[in-house]
Length: 177
Image (cartoon, rainbow, N blue to C red; front, side):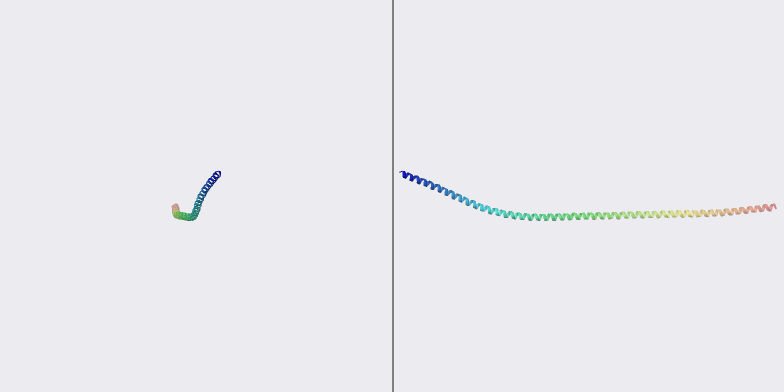
């Protein structure tokens, strides 16, 4: 009996160990299955990561190309804007130069007119002064001629008086004689 009990206990213990081993095998198989699922998921994740990395690289390349294109476009736009600004500045300078040239020409015309008017006024004044001098010279000449004529008349009168006096003296002498 004791042996039977020990056998039963040994069988029960062996069964318990077999059950425990079976449970451990089942747990091990479950864990191995979980591990395979996780490995597959990990492999799928790695493939997804690689795919995402490749897509990110493509996006980065595309973004860099777009940035380069935008920089070039902005640079071209800046160059165009700068060229337009330079052209507008050149047009403003040319317009100002034209205006200055026009103003200088107008000023020169005005000065030429003023100079011509001044010259004309000077000539008129010179002619007026010349006419006044000629008139003064003519009057002086006429005055001299008048004085000469008056002197001649006086001399003639004096001679007439002298002759009259001589005649009177002769008459008086004739009368006395």
